[in-house]
Structures are given as C-alpha cells and as structure tokens.
Amino acid sequence: MSVEVVVHGENNMRSRVLALMSYLGVLVFVPLVTNRDDEYVHFHARQGLVIWTFGVLAIFMLYVPGLGKLIFSFLAMAVMAYSLIGIVSVALHKAWKLPFIYGLASRL
Image (cartoon, rainbow, N blue to C red; front, side, top):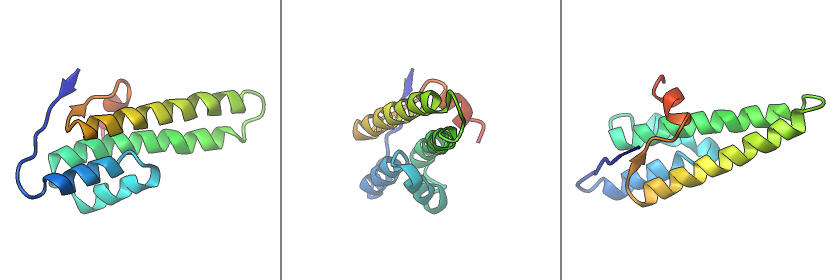
C-alpha cells in the first residue's frame, strides 16, 4: 500500500534530496536533524532510521559465533533491498509504506 505526498513550491528539490539521504546509511541523521517540519522528509527519515538500525544490528551479528554470518547476510540483503525500494520511492516522489519497516517507523 502506498501513500502519495506531493510537495509543492521551492522546497521540492530540497525535500527530495533530504528524503533520498534517508536511505543512504548514516546520512539518515541529516534529514532527521535539519528538517522536522516537512512531513514528506520526516516520513522517509523515520523509515531510513529503522533500516539503518538493522544495518548496525547486522554488523554486530558478525561477532556471534555459529549463525552470526548467516544472520548478517540475511540482514544485509534486507537492508540493501529496503534502501533500494526507498530510493525508488523518493525518485518517483511517492511515500511507500515499506512492509515491516513502516510498522516500526510509525512508533518513532
């Protein structure tokens, strides 16, 4: 299910760039800190923060003996897939609710 949020005016390109940064790893903190009043950017930043958290969790899984590398591989693929879907969403100027991610992001 998707929700389309259209931003009009001069901040259109700025909003899209900040929303795109939400899905580029640690750069998620730039839109979180600088642009809290733009609903479109904040939507993507919350989802990006959840994805980034899973990326950090994936790195820590490498230190778990046994199944750690398998869990890391699964989480890393999920982070890359969700990030790519988020980037496509921003490129199409949409606000897609990513499965599982949106549920966690809406609690932030």
